[in-house]
Each structure stands twice: as structure tokens, then as C-alpha cells.
Amino acid sequence: MKSLVISSIALIVVLWVRPVSGQTFTFDETGRGTEITTSGGTLPIPFSTTPAPLTYHLGYASAPGDILILEPTGTNQALSDILRFDANGNVTVFSDMEPGEAPDGLADVPVLPAPLPVSITVLENGPGGSPGSESGINGLFGYTPAPGTPGASPAGVAPVTFNFVSDVPEPSSWGLLVLGLGVALLARRRRPIA
Image 1 (cartoon, rainbow, N blue to C red):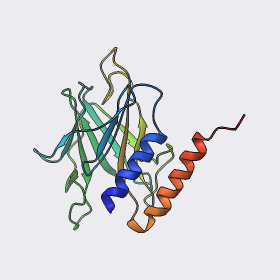
Image 2 (cartoon, rainbow, N blue to C red):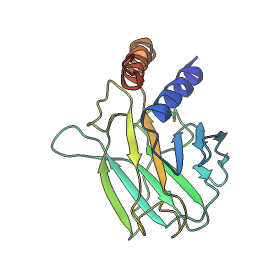
Image 3 (cartoon, rainbow, N blue to C red):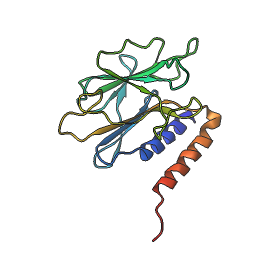
Image 4 (spheres, rainbow, N blue to C red):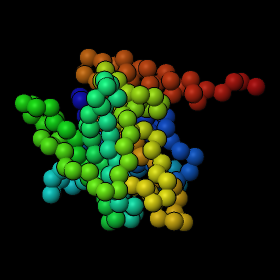
């Protein structure tokens, strides 16, 4: 049930924050990822967990570096996730694991690695780009890297956009969240009748 809801949320997010052109990659810390191609088709993103943790294979040689994702709450914003891009077309996801708890995603690690020299820092946000909340879906949405920044496509190639789902609400909140995102999506796409 949890997998179905995460997949449904990811699809709604992809449709909601889809760019005008280029590729859109939407993925999470559990191995679920999709790519919307430049032609508008949808493909699963291949991934591996060997060596650990979770690595998605994007299919293009991206600019290397880290995206450091901070929790948006409190005065001491803690690092919660790292998206590490390499020059071979891969992004490895590291997600902090709560002390004393078992991992709940393929990307969970007990200690996050040291950031690479080339990195950018962002606050977790919600699907609309606003600061996220621990009671709703959050992560990194609508990130389109500038040339030379982590995840950027090579010169002359269509731009890419990334949506990373870090946290999802507890199962009791899923129905309300999916309903709310669905209504927001319909309202956004609704056109007046001539």
C-alpha cells in the first residue's frame, strides 16, 4: 500500500512541476523513479544498490557535485539528504537515518558522507516550491541546474529538472494529501470555457 501511494504521489508531483522542455527526473529514497523524456514519454529510471546506497542511472554525463538538502525547520537546519552526481550519469542518494531506528529506504545511511568540494545547499521544499513540512511531502522539487552545477546536462543538450521526494506523510495522512494534490493539479490545468 505504501509503495502504491508513493508512486501515486510521485506521478502527481511530476505532472505538477513538469518543465516546458527537456527531461524531468523524479525519484525518491526507496528506488522508485521516473523520467519524462524530451518527447513526453515516461520511463522508469534504472537503479542499483551495489555498492550501497541507492544509485540512479540517468543516462547522460552530468556535472559532478553534491546537492545538500537541509531540513527547513528550526534555527539549526540539519543536513538530511545528499544527492551526489558523478560524471558518469549517476546520482547516488544518501538519506539520514533516525538514531536507533531501522532503515526505511534504500538510501538510508547511519552517517552522511562528507560533502564534495563542489556542492550547493538548498532547503527541503514542497511540490509547489514552498518550504516543506514534516507533516507533508517534501524534498527537492523543480531543481533545474545551471551550467556546471551538480546534475547539469552537457552544453547543447536539453535542460533537465529534478524532483526528489525525501519525506512522505504517515499513512493516515496519505488520502488527504493525494486528494489535495489532485485538486490543486486539476485547478491549475482547468481552462475557462469559451
